[in-house]
Amino acid sequence: MLRNFYPYEYVESVFSIDYDKLYRRGYRGIIFDVDNTLVHHGDDSTAEIDHLFRTIHSIGFKTLLLTDNNEERLKRFTRNIETLYICDAQKPNPSSYLKAISLLDMDKKRVVCIGDQIFKDILGANKSGMVSILVKFIRLDTETKIGKRRYLEKIILWFYKHNKSAQHRLGDIDKEKDK
Image 1 (cartoon, rainbow, N blue to C red):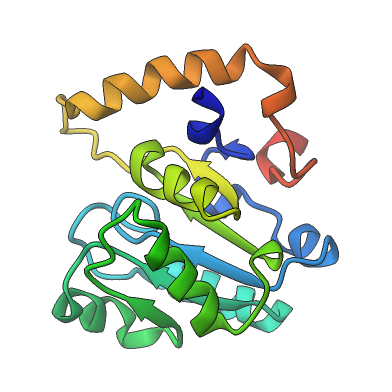
Image 2 (cartoon, one colour):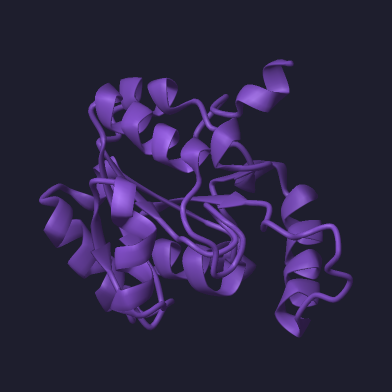
């Protein structure tokens, strides 16, 4: 039962992922969550995120943002990013993930979903039959409290870290580990 909540990989951030290796392994699409995955909740895109998307696209990936945010927020966020998006996704509803795959026009076995929430991003991707990568959520130094779900995530991650067969199912895609 817990396996539905386990990501294929767990990395520090979207910048820790070796996208070249993912591409060489046959993946061609990436579905990203936005808030606390790419930027802090509610923030606009940054120059680093804009550059990351240009790099990912130059490798050959198609991208899509899957978010529970509204379209006004996404239009502001994608001002400098060429990407597809789905708003008001009602994650972890698998229908949103399957719609994303359809918009990307590819088989779900060639798509990776990247997000910061186990109960939304990872669960939705896993229930849809897609590969999932969990990143540590972006948190400001001044933030001292986290939501109740984050505490539950810590419990699930404890079990995940003690289940070697659930970890590193994509192989060595974490650039930070090489340092």
